[in-house]
Amino acid sequence: MLTAFTCAYNQGVKIIQRHNWQVTPRQAVEIQKTLAAEVIKTGSISSPRRIAGVDISVNRFSKTGSGAVVVLDYPSLQIAEVQVVKDAVTFPYVPGLLSFREIPLLLQAFEKLKTAPDLVLVDGQGIAHPRRIGLASHLGLILGIPTIGCAKSRLCGEHVVPDIKSGSFTDLTDSGEVIGAVVRTRANVKPLYISIGHLISLPNAIKWVLACCRGCRLPEPTRLAHQAAGGNLKVVVALK
Image (tube, rainbow, N blue to C red; front, side, top):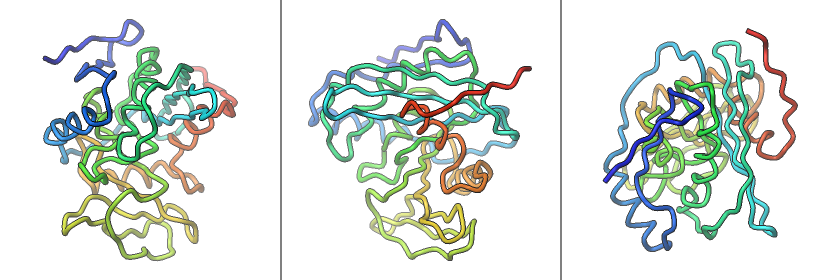
């Protein structure tokens, strides 16, 4: 049974409780197999007003983590809101199951948001995942908001190296299925692995990642979220 509730802080963000988070790795795999069939791999966004980036920083020694959500106004990409939550991380580190380790922290940050995003860029995989449900897809199903996976490394699949020019990309495929794109976001730097999270097509995902890159390898939403999660973001919010 699905339970949806609206955050007390933000009437625009609804979090859908899809399952219990206190599960074993074996149970987590079964949950992924069930949820993967619900990921919507189509959709377009014409004029988002706010784009969010999310990231997690985990201290391996203290078993605590920081989950950050940074919301930017578009097209200025100025910071509209930042929420960072620190808490215990209880799920073990298991490749392919990072969403069970990281999403509980991110949801706490989303619950605090006063600014609803129209699109979420996630530092992690979308459907470019062995079971086609990485962090971005899992989070998208819970939030009901279009999400894009913007990973710095490959989890699965094969690809041809894209041209060195900014904006160049090649398909990321796995067993003949296109699961993402390898996108050169800045000339002569390592590409990013872009994949559908939820409620968006791959061409649109590529489009919006490139639209959010302002001279850096990482798109601004996830670049700033990475800084926020690490405690290194100096926030200046423009007055409305």
